[in-house]
Image (cartoon, rainbow, N blue to C red; front, top):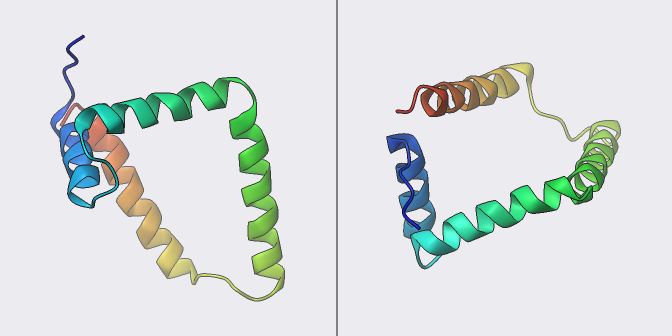
Length: 88
């Protein structure tokens, strides 16, 4: 099977390989699909709840990020999502 990816997704795959996280594009895609499948069986929801619980505990303990830091990170993510949506 051949798959065509938007340039931003191709770069994402290359970055993951370059970071040493995966040995090939096939491994990146397989891991991505495995994550999607785990979300369909409720595993994702349980994992998300656990992460929320951990975040609340961190906040209660005073381990928080500044509003400016959070806003900056969100802007970076939104830009990435826009590029993906636009097929860049």
